[in-house]
Image 1 (cartoon, rainbow, N blue to C red):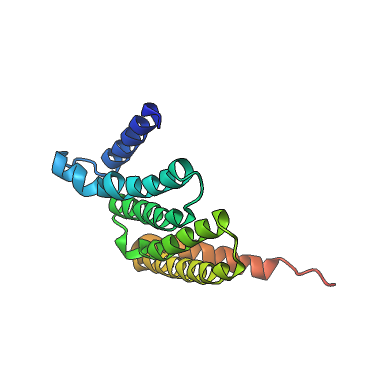
Image 2: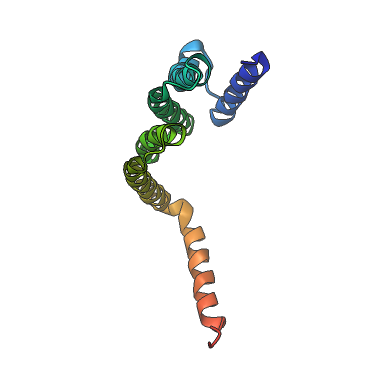
Amino acid sequence: MNVRVILGSVLLLFGVFLFLNKGAVINPGTIFAYFWPSLFVIPLGLFFHWLYFSVTKRRGVGLLVPGGILFTAGLVCQLAMLLDGWSYMWPGFILAVAVGLFELYFFGSRHRGLLIPIYILTVIGLLFSAVFSIGTFFSNLQFSQPFVAIALIVIGALMLFIRRKQV
Protein backbone atom coordinates (compact mmCIF):
# COMPACT_ATOMS: atom_id res chain seq x y z
CA MET A 1 0.00 0.00 0.00
CA ASN A 2 1.19 3.48 -0.77
CA VAL A 3 2.67 5.38 2.19
CA ARG A 4 1.01 8.61 1.00
CA VAL A 5 -2.43 6.97 1.19
CA ILE A 6 -1.85 5.78 4.76
CA LEU A 7 -0.37 9.07 5.92
CA GLY A 8 -3.09 11.06 4.17
CA SER A 9 -5.81 8.96 5.81
CA VAL A 10 -4.23 9.39 9.24
CA LEU A 11 -3.93 13.16 8.78
CA LEU A 12 -7.50 13.38 7.51
CA LEU A 13 -8.88 11.49 10.52
CA PHE A 14 -6.79 13.54 12.91
CA GLY A 15 -8.03 16.76 11.31
CA VAL A 16 -11.66 15.64 11.64
CA PHE A 17 -10.96 14.77 15.27
CA LEU A 18 -9.48 18.20 15.97
CA PHE A 19 -12.35 19.93 14.18
CA LEU A 20 -15.03 18.06 16.11
CA ASN A 21 -13.34 18.40 19.51
CA LYS A 22 -12.54 22.06 19.74
CA GLY A 23 -10.60 22.86 22.89
CA ALA A 24 -10.10 19.22 23.88
CA VAL A 25 -6.84 18.11 25.41
CA ILE A 26 -4.96 15.94 22.92
CA ASN A 27 -2.90 13.09 24.36
CA PRO A 28 -2.17 9.51 23.24
CA GLY A 29 -4.98 8.14 25.41
CA THR A 30 -7.52 10.45 23.83
CA ILE A 31 -6.34 9.57 20.34
CA PHE A 32 -6.46 5.85 21.14
CA ALA A 33 -9.93 6.22 22.67
CA TYR A 34 -11.33 7.89 19.54
CA PHE A 35 -9.45 6.00 16.82
CA TRP A 36 -9.41 2.40 18.05
CA PRO A 37 -11.58 1.26 15.09
CA SER A 38 -9.12 2.76 12.61
CA LEU A 39 -6.19 1.21 14.46
CA PHE A 40 -7.52 -2.33 14.92
CA VAL A 41 -10.86 -3.23 13.32
CA ILE A 42 -10.60 -1.61 9.87
CA PRO A 43 -7.05 -2.88 9.19
CA LEU A 44 -8.14 -6.41 10.14
CA GLY A 45 -11.01 -6.21 7.65
CA LEU A 46 -8.62 -4.92 4.98
CA PHE A 47 -6.23 -7.77 5.86
CA PHE A 48 -8.92 -10.36 5.04
CA HIS A 49 -9.57 -8.63 1.73
CA TRP A 50 -5.84 -8.55 0.98
CA LEU A 51 -5.62 -12.28 1.73
CA TYR A 52 -8.40 -13.02 -0.72
CA PHE A 53 -7.27 -10.78 -3.57
CA SER A 54 -3.49 -11.29 -3.26
CA VAL A 55 -2.44 -14.40 -1.38
CA THR A 56 -5.13 -16.97 -2.20
CA LYS A 57 -5.49 -15.73 -5.79
CA ARG A 58 -9.30 -15.55 -5.41
CA ARG A 59 -9.79 -19.12 -4.23
CA GLY A 60 -10.76 -18.57 -0.58
CA VAL A 61 -13.96 -16.59 -1.09
CA GLY A 62 -14.97 -17.27 2.51
CA LEU A 63 -12.36 -14.74 3.65
CA LEU A 64 -14.56 -11.94 2.32
CA VAL A 65 -17.35 -12.56 4.84
CA PRO A 66 -15.33 -11.65 7.96
CA GLY A 67 -13.45 -9.05 5.91
CA GLY A 68 -16.63 -7.28 4.85
CA ILE A 69 -18.15 -7.53 8.32
CA LEU A 70 -15.06 -6.21 10.09
CA PHE A 71 -14.45 -3.41 7.61
CA THR A 72 -18.05 -2.18 7.67
CA ALA A 73 -18.32 -2.55 11.45
CA GLY A 74 -15.05 -0.64 11.79
CA LEU A 75 -16.40 2.21 9.68
CA VAL A 76 -19.60 2.28 11.75
CA CYS A 77 -17.61 2.30 14.99
CA GLN A 78 -15.29 5.04 13.74
CA LEU A 79 -18.18 7.27 12.69
CA ALA A 80 -19.96 6.61 15.98
CA MET A 81 -16.82 7.51 17.94
CA LEU A 82 -16.20 10.73 16.01
CA LEU A 83 -19.82 11.88 15.98
CA ASP A 84 -20.80 10.43 19.38
CA GLY A 85 -23.65 8.70 17.61
CA TRP A 86 -23.87 5.23 19.13
CA SER A 87 -27.60 5.66 19.68
CA TYR A 88 -28.34 5.90 15.96
CA MET A 89 -25.35 4.15 14.34
CA TRP A 90 -25.98 0.66 15.72
CA PRO A 91 -28.05 -0.52 12.70
CA GLY A 92 -24.79 -0.36 10.77
CA PHE A 93 -23.80 -3.60 12.46
CA ILE A 94 -26.76 -5.34 10.84
CA LEU A 95 -25.70 -3.85 7.51
CA ALA A 96 -22.15 -5.09 8.13
CA VAL A 97 -23.35 -8.70 8.01
CA ALA A 98 -25.27 -7.94 4.81
CA VAL A 99 -22.09 -6.46 3.26
CA GLY A 100 -20.05 -9.55 4.19
CA LEU A 101 -22.65 -11.89 2.71
CA PHE A 102 -22.98 -9.74 -0.41
CA GLU A 103 -19.23 -9.98 -0.99
CA LEU A 104 -19.54 -13.77 -0.69
CA TYR A 105 -22.35 -13.70 -3.25
CA PHE A 106 -20.64 -11.27 -5.64
CA PHE A 107 -17.19 -12.87 -5.70
CA GLY A 108 -18.38 -16.44 -5.08
CA SER A 109 -20.58 -18.79 -7.03
CA ARG A 110 -23.52 -16.34 -7.08
CA HIS A 111 -25.94 -18.73 -5.46
CA ARG A 112 -29.31 -16.97 -5.58
CA GLY A 113 -30.42 -18.34 -2.21
CA LEU A 114 -27.81 -16.15 -0.55
CA LEU A 115 -29.69 -13.04 -1.69
CA ILE A 116 -32.58 -13.75 0.70
CA PRO A 117 -30.65 -13.06 3.93
CA ILE A 118 -28.81 -10.21 2.22
CA TYR A 119 -32.10 -8.49 1.34
CA ILE A 120 -33.64 -9.16 4.76
CA LEU A 121 -30.63 -7.81 6.66
CA THR A 122 -30.33 -4.79 4.37
CA VAL A 123 -34.01 -3.85 4.72
CA ILE A 124 -33.96 -4.33 8.50
CA GLY A 125 -30.72 -2.33 8.84
CA LEU A 126 -31.96 0.53 6.67
CA LEU A 127 -35.36 0.56 8.36
CA PHE A 128 -33.85 0.74 11.85
CA SER A 129 -31.36 3.33 10.65
CA ALA A 130 -34.13 5.52 9.25
CA VAL A 131 -36.34 5.15 12.32
CA PHE A 132 -33.59 5.93 14.82
CA SER A 133 -32.16 8.77 12.75
CA ILE A 134 -35.59 10.40 12.46
CA GLY A 135 -36.16 9.73 16.16
CA THR A 136 -32.87 11.39 17.04
CA PHE A 137 -33.74 14.34 14.80
CA PHE A 138 -37.12 14.83 16.47
CA SER A 139 -35.75 14.26 19.98
CA ASN A 140 -33.88 17.55 19.64
CA LEU A 141 -37.16 19.35 19.10
CA GLN A 142 -35.89 22.75 20.20
CA PHE A 143 -33.33 22.55 17.37
CA SER A 144 -35.51 20.93 14.72
CA GLN A 145 -38.86 22.57 15.46
CA PRO A 146 -38.30 25.55 13.12
CA PHE A 147 -37.27 23.23 10.29
CA VAL A 148 -40.27 20.96 10.83
CA ALA A 149 -42.59 23.99 10.99
CA ILE A 150 -41.19 25.40 7.73
CA ALA A 151 -41.47 22.01 6.04
CA LEU A 152 -45.09 21.62 7.15
CA ILE A 153 -45.95 25.14 5.94
CA VAL A 154 -44.35 24.50 2.54
CA ILE A 155 -46.03 21.11 2.13
CA GLY A 156 -49.40 22.52 3.18
CA ALA A 157 -49.10 25.48 0.82
CA LEU A 158 -48.16 23.22 -2.05
CA MET A 159 -51.13 20.99 -1.36
CA LEU A 160 -53.47 23.98 -1.30
CA PHE A 161 -52.23 26.00 -4.23
CA ILE A 162 -50.90 23.51 -6.76
CA ARG A 163 -53.68 21.91 -8.73
CA ARG A 164 -53.55 18.32 -9.79
CA LYS A 165 -53.80 17.78 -13.51
CA GLN A 166 -57.02 16.12 -14.54
CA VAL A 167 -56.37 13.03 -16.62
